[in-house]
Image (cartoon, rainbow, N blue to C red; front, side, top):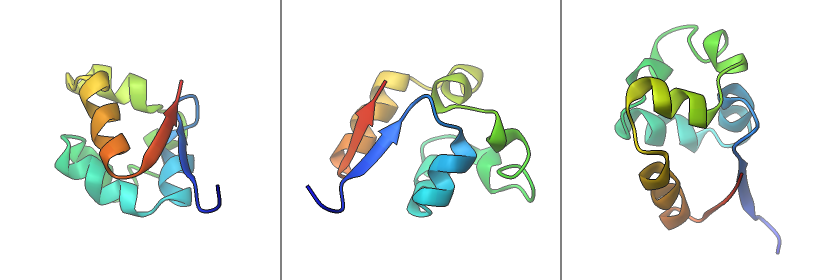
Length: 77
């Protein structure tokens, strides 16, 4: 399927947001508020994965994945 948007949870937040820039605003609205702080994506985002970030922020990973899927992303773990 062309234009398939695949989120691999083993990839860093930086890699995912570089590939899918729309993810930054979605993550901010989902509770990852630090994502928009200057430099945060380029520093912590390089080693942080979505599961690690969700755990740190107290965000349900299952709920976050469900929201990503409603936006048309396929999530692989």
